[in-house]
Length: 320
Image (cartoon, rainbow, N blue to C red; front, side, top):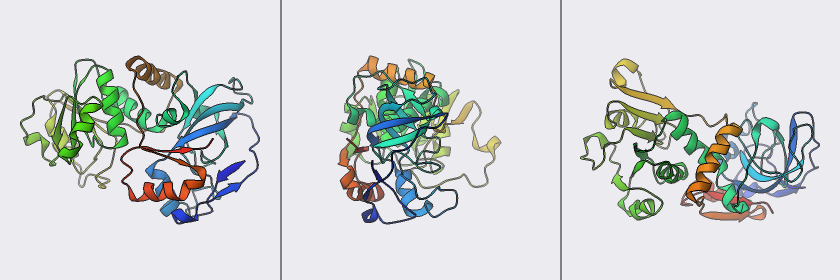
């Protein structure tokens, strides 16, 4: 099979398509015929900084998500030809991931889906939309009638959150750094947009959010906690602000009375939450968002863009 494998940290232009043996199914694992894979910043970090560490099982095929069909179900209970998505749980780090024509996955990582989406559109869903949906449902307990503020709205997860939040009956405020992004954010469901000056709690907002998804992270987290109503919920899911912890964190003084601070870690998907997510996508007619599509032969170009940013949305790797 064709695959992209790295032996350690390397430059984007060192990534090449190679021939690898077809994986053989073993108990508790399934063989997935991959049609497409979404690319993620964590895969660029793997290639640039992580791959030389002992906890990475090099040589490794990167990729933390994919879409495809069951090629060999082994002892899993799946059927050959089932349409599936696979994500997280060690993909592309502990074992070979999705940059390949076939990938061997633990059963717990693979989820059957019923959808009419084409393969490229479907490839934009797994990690991005699951992170958004899990943040809304588990982290924020979003309900129809809530007012949701999405901080980091122009990110891939931010845009997915706007789509899903609107579909779930919320009024959606999109916060971003530039007014030039407002028209795009409104076109995908935002009811209003504001410029994120890192002091949103001092702004005179048209809508007062009772739920807030924090994708910028610790850099703006305290401002987010001050922005929501009492009671209110803030879910910290992202670290786009490149600040990774809160210095001298004192929860009693840091978290306002009546505000609930939660988080969402996307490493534990379940069939039940995947089913619920696709039900919302289907019922609302959501078109998954992506910006660029590359073939396997274009992996160096794709990873260069992934590394430098500027794609303007999700990058998809077309495998077939």
